[in-house]
Length: 91
Image 1 (cartoon, rainbow, N blue to C red):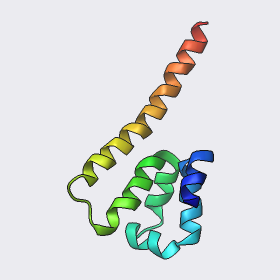
Image 2 (cartoon, one colour; image 1 turned 90 degrees about the vertical axis):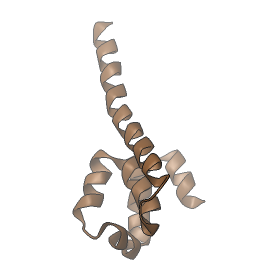
Image 3 (cartoon, rainbow, N blue to C red; image 1 turned 180 degrees about the horizontal axis):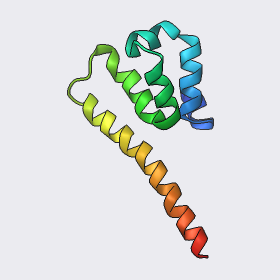
Image 4 (cartoon, rainbow, N blue to C red; image 1 turned 90 degrees about the horizontal axis):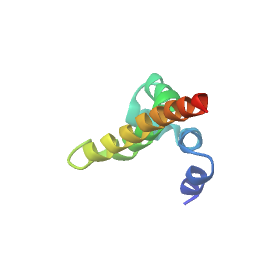
């Protein structure tokens, strides 16, 4: 419940940071390396969180759908910022 509140108030990067500090063994078991979570933290936070949630039992079935949706959310956040900048530049 606490992680959900942090997610709502601050965002996915804060949840990644708090969760990695609280349970580093679980993070290292899922990712196996330090580089992937750091890159996910910087560029694809929703996809990183989703992968962390679904990868413990292996990525099968609907897990691929959840990962694809998280990737769409991450990519749309980048695309939405560009559209907003263009609209502001025209005004």
